Image 1 (cartoon, helix red, strand yellow):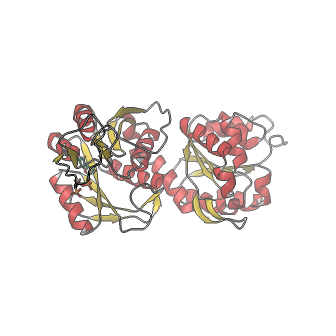
Image 2 (image 1 turned 180 degrees about the vertical axis):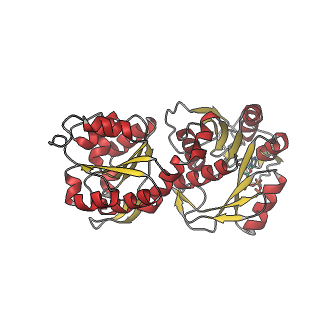
Image 3 (image 1 turned 90 degrees about the horizontal axis):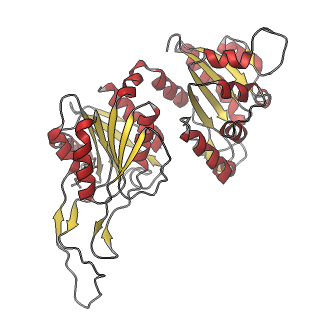
Length: 399
Ligand code: CTP
């Protein structure tokens, strides 16, 4: 982190009292930090505190007498490698999403051309309001990384989403981004699978599962935010896909379609992370018409599908990295280790259905990464975006 230049921008929310901790962590790790605030932010945290922890002047005014020769919002923007807005209120999210620049924070942000992180913090009703969500989506589409707020007790007395992620976790995300390893991803292409495959039974029915595609999509977004090109094969998902120039979407609605797309694309990729919940069986015969109800029992005969991950494991070269998931209900570690070796993976991500908040269709996940040498790396319960970051960081360490 030595000689890295970070702007910590603070907007006016109660979580601003935590910003000095983030600044302190960045300074301690060797970064140079400049602090830019809105006027309202200084209602929650003093200029003296911010100046002391950052060891630099604090910029809260657009017009003042110091440095009359310098256009401050441009020189700060040019100076920094990374811009972190923590806390980010609904107001600054709205301003940046819509190009409004009416104070030193919003003008500096608009003049900044490199990587921006936003750590929103606000009342949960405000956070979930359609306009804030729309603005957040706009920012994500433009490459801003949103460090999504977590559930918790909010200053307004509500309990819900809107609590700013802890300074230590924001620091880890920035540290990862600034690590020289990340540049490796800029020249690489990865295959990612996400969502559920549906296997047709008749004209109106299928065999499927509850996978939402959230985990796989978060992985694709994380890879793309580090400049990697992603070929994302999606089955059935319940997450909205944004337009991201680094992510190419390919449909793989059935196990067979997903298999065909994956084996075709994998040879031109530097690696693959397969998170899709692929059906293990597909009906032998598919009726064109709706199967009519009858009094006697109905037997469906199913054929096994091809294991996509195992197939890629067979064609994988030494230069490629292959990562799979294991969703287990019992003998979790043992079963995951078997999958890791049988499918020739570099590491496997275990999520256990017995962990509360982990698995399908939840916004959170709790994983353990198991390496080829069977070493275990357990993580606490996190949002799927944070989990994606942990997985991508681990992948980087293998490149
Ligand atoms: N997988 C795959 N193709 C399949 C089945 C699974 O690519 N036909 C991949 C999944 O995307 C995941 C990994 O294999 O990365 C493990 O999937 P999981 O369902 O946990 O295990 P299975 O191998 O299907 O074994 P089982 O269902 O018996 O646990």
